Image (cartoon, rainbow, N blue to C red; front, side):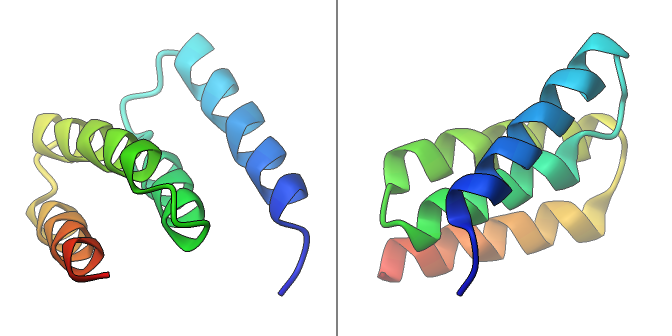
Length: 79
């Protein structure tokens, strides 16, 4: 449902801005991009974003989001 390409473009713009600003908490954008690619059955790209989100969540000491992302990766493995 909705404009997948528009969502992807908005998330990519957000990620670019946050990278430029050296934002420490970009995990949610990375995770959302992973979700978007997972829904399109592009698991390789999804995993790349999930892995980067995991790195961010670990670096910023966010164990709940680490667990959430690991769960999502596990569910994706079952897809």
